[in-house]
Length: 145
Image (cartoon, rainbow, N blue to C red; front, side, top):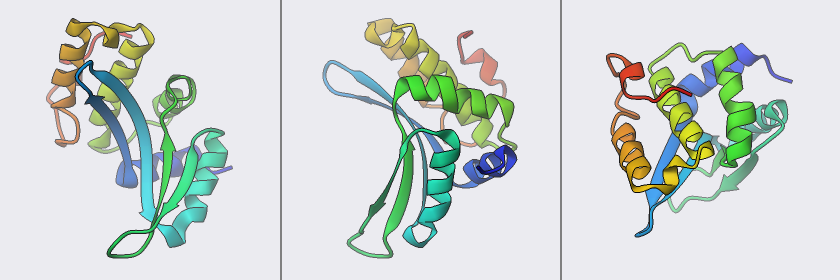
């Protein structure tokens, strides 16, 4: 088992909290990933084993070295394992903003708000603030849990 602070620091640098909205009848997908060069796959396997969820896959690329990716996309695993973990071990960088938005969207999904037009519109507006590096006050963007 890896130390939680190690994983949080690692995720701050290499992790991604991703939300996608796809399709004509929009579907929302949430995913936490960490991607590395394939020769570091055992670190990802240790992270997977520490969380007890997700999967690790190695991908060949057309150009460049192969990559390894740890992914968690199952909503129950996200809300019961990943979110509580990063609440206990906060990210000490701008990735915290992405996590806060991600967390709120996941809770919207738990409440089935992503199945409404209003919910999709809110999620799309939140997504605009992800991966930009800063938001003055993320609490203004997000609904309460």
